[in-house]
Length: 214
Ligand code: G3P
Image (cartoon, rainbow, N blue to C red; front, side, top):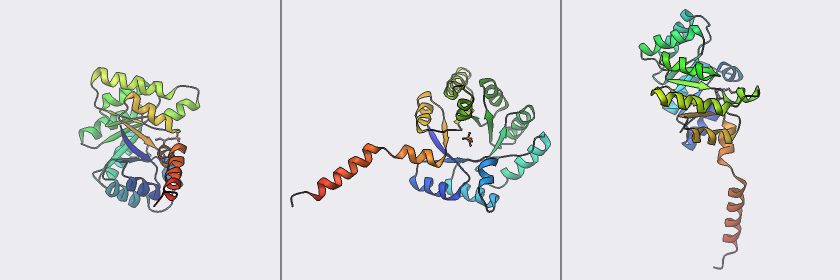
């Protein structure tokens, strides 16, 4: 399973790239709004630094506006992926962008049927939001299992990005199910790195080494 970082924060992307464990970045309007500075410059910087797909969301609601925004963003860099919330309007836009060779990420996916539609439209990626499903008392990981099974049943190429990840355990579950990608906040990445027994083990090795007979 591939790991993307779910952030628009430059320091977080730089740190994760330095660790060598992420191969893409996903942003959304809420994440971008939290950051200052020149958003377009930062996105281009991420494209070069990460060397993999960088999802950037369109804000227009109508097909014409989505297409215009998508084409402008896609022209910035070959690694740009256009993120569109799944709606009746956006499905047609995804189909058109796919025909133009522009990669898409069908986002705010909360049902298997939405994922089927995204795949039918030719989306490069679909982003089911597990955390927000759990927030409303549903099981986000069940949705990932359903989409995995359906995509495998019919050989859909659309890659599943497990999004709205709120705990390290959800990353493990996503990998066990066979999701293609998990996009994770930086905090979750750091939680994946650490384990109390690792810290204790390092401390014990250091203490034992300091007491060695020389
Ligand atoms: O990838 C989608 C993500 O940014 C949403 O996460 O925690 O706001 O539901 P969250």
